[in-house]
Length: 127
Image 1 (tube, rainbow, N blue to C red):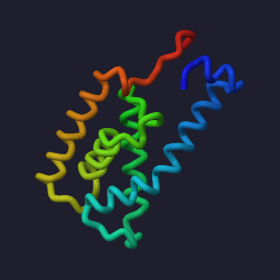
Image 2 (cartoon, helix red, strand yellow):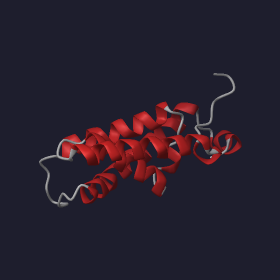
Image 3 (spheres, rainbow, N blue to C red):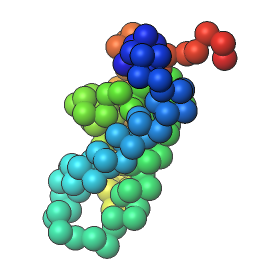
Image 4 (cartoon, helix red, strand yellow):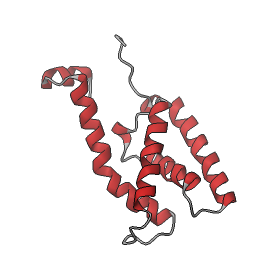
């Protein structure tokens, strides 16, 4: 959404942030299903849902900390892949070698995403 579109709709910066956060929350359940598949956990199992959800949120927060626009690109396969790698790199039941590979892969994906203009968070000029 461009700045002109935001002004035309009468949205504040906080409104826009809240919309993006709700977009992430709406996709969190879908992300959890994807992560479970990647961890070979059946979709109906709920024992580890809290841990998976925590790692998904931590992955999103870590990418935002690195200046990656997760909210606008949450449906993008690179973003989803990075989140999956973050979870695999930190989740409890994954082998040590697989965790290390997942952490390295996550780091590489984030480095590449942060170099791409398409994935960078827009910085407010008045900030």
